[in-house]
Image 1 (cartoon, rainbow, N blue to C red):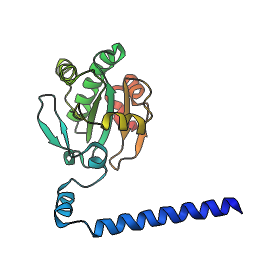
Image 2 (cartoon, helix red, strand yellow):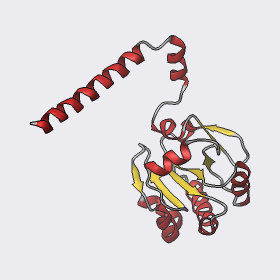
Image 3 (cartoon, rainbow, N blue to C red):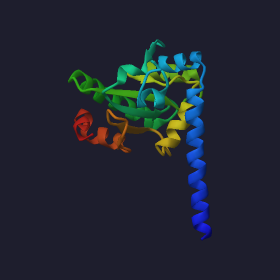
Image 4 (spheres, one colour):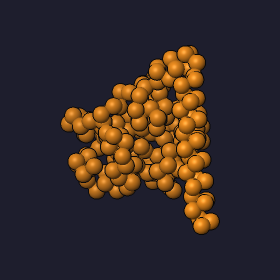
Length: 182
């Protein structure tokens, strides 16, 4: 009986929290609704924010990744296994994109500074996008995808579903052909 009471209480809390959130959205001032409408829609922007950066420092809207499989690459320059795997991944990525595959990688840096991240991206000629160094998303993404060590590569399908938690192994064993496995 006590378990049923606790379960009912939990259902009530969830229901009322959802109701309050719904009411808060309806009561949002027009400026807030306008700002919300200006954000890119979909799972990509929810996961990575509105903009990512390129190796040259320019910003790119995350909406450019719509309809693509996405790799999330956790790495750092100070990590010897990362420095060994990154050139392999760059080659595979270039082959995939060169073959017309709808694929993008988002680099999540565990470097010790923004300068170190930038130097790593330039040195290895990373052709993909990255979350900004100062973004809190680094830890959020690592936790969400259970990253316990680097380098790590997680693959998401075009709808944001996790396809591979061990894509690093896929790329090391199959190169660009790994794309077809995902």
